[in-house]
Length: 105
Image (cartoon, rainbow, N blue to C red):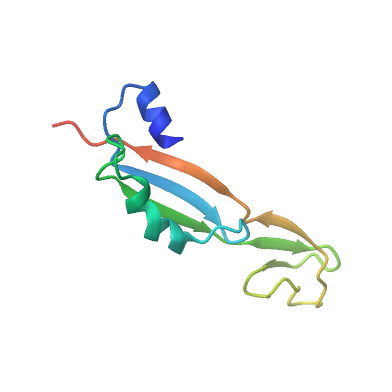
């Protein structure tokens, strides 16, 4: 998507791509960092670009006691009442947050 956006807007190079990756998205940031250099090979628009990842906490609201908590840290269980019944508030994101272009001197 970032490459396509750059091409559509006549941007010859990207400096960086920033992704928002939620703890509950199922995507592991370590793999993005590991494989990004391979993905950008032979893609002139992306060559030399940097990958930034913003991790978004998996937050939930307990449906039984209204406590807010981190789903991953608490292993899906409300720390206040022990319930597993919850409404997910955040942490399922997987999106491009920002695409940076090099500064022109």
